[in-house]
Image 1: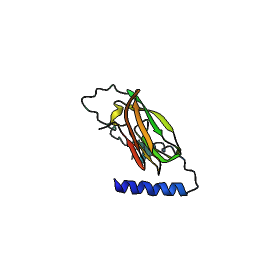
Image 2: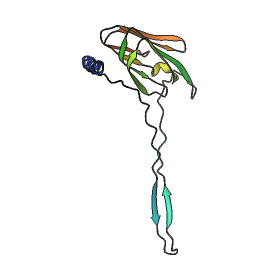
Image 3: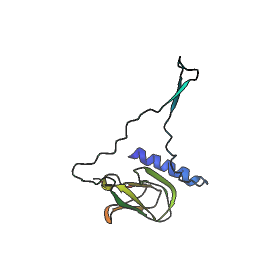
Image 4: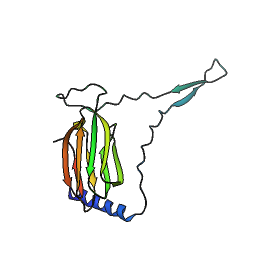
Length: 162
């Protein structure tokens, strides 16, 4: 925990001292599937035969859910992340729609973000805030019910998992 705090403070100092504006960049699109072309000459024909082979990849497996939490395939929960405070947070990292971690830098407070996470969202929703000097309060609300709220300075983490 102390190492994480030191790393966060170093990042904070670098961001505070830099005059560059940092922008969140969307992830790159998935690369197309590779295809391979081979030529097989035949003895009965004067023109070569061309074959295209596409490798077959196994289907990705989704995250497992606990047997006590029944889910409907494709069902989502509305998750609202909120950070209260004054000034700016060095960065805010949260689980976004699709289960991907997103980080926003030099964020003006107060801040709020709504995402849709697969049910049960309690298993994947999370937000962490790095700031220096000022207290912030984070909260996670799933389908209108507040599941976690924390107040802290430096590194503050909210997650409904206990």
